[in-house]
Image 1 (cartoon, rainbow, N blue to C red):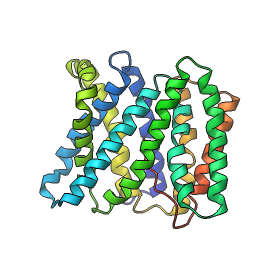
Image 2 (cartoon, rainbow, N blue to C red):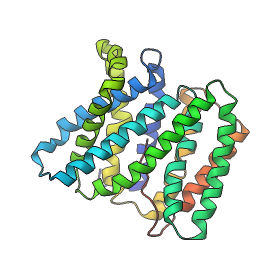
Image 3 (cartoon, rainbow, N blue to C red):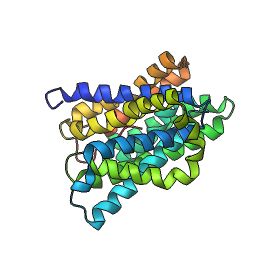
Image 4 (cartoon, helix red, strand yellow):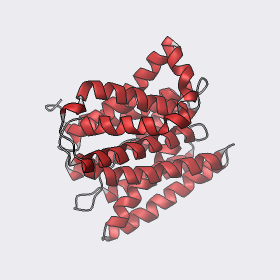
Amino acid sequence: MHRIPAPVLFVFSGLTQYVGAGLAVGLFATATATGVAWSRIAVASLLLLAVSRPWRLRWDAASLRAAAAFGVVLAAMNCTFYASLEHLPLGNAVAIEFLGPVLVGALTGRGVRERVAILLSLAGVTLLAGVTLQADGGLVGLVLVLAAAACWAGYILLGRVVSQQGPGLGALAVGMAVGALVFAPFFGASAVPLFVDPWLLLALVGIAVASSIVPYGIDQVVLRRLSSAQFAILLAIWPASAALVGAVVLQQVPGVAEVVGVVLVSAAIALTSRPGPTAPVAPEV
């Protein structure tokens, strides 16, 4: 994997993330969206624990607290995002959720481009939100995806701390396990149907691998190799790739306003991710 160009890995990571999310929508008929999201996190954490075996590492109280907080925010981000997919098209949800990393980059920056990015992202989100509110349950979906955006902002800040704990998947495995345990009392019961049917469980494992194991594992490699310029270009295509996956997998064909909104959000992401000390490292959903 270390010999594969970072941009190739990054694009593959983003596509698997949103393909997994698109496939997960198919499980909403059997379990709630939050139940599907929690199941994905729980299964992924078990697989990561088995692979990384974090108990062999040296942990101190600060590292454990950081990993735990990181995992709880990650779980909240996934649960709110998946819940929003019951009400929003995938492309809209992803583009609106990017308001989180865009605002982190813009508010921590000091240049003109960060301020322009805020205006572009707000304009894009306003267009997407306007389309969203025309649909049944649009307001609920908008609130949920904005909560996911806030969690994504927290993920970025906590992710910086956790990333300093060294290479490997140990901190990610511990964090996701804590997140799964914290949300189990709320969403675990609704996920039971996914675990008692062998075919649904197999599908769930595939979704966990596609949406969590692959992208989060690749990030451990990519974010140590990718230049800021490459990251900017690739990150800016994520909302567009999500809209493409939504159109192909879910037959959610975007309208003109949605396309313009995605383009504006992508431009804002590119601006806040240009080379410079203030550019944020934005993780996937």
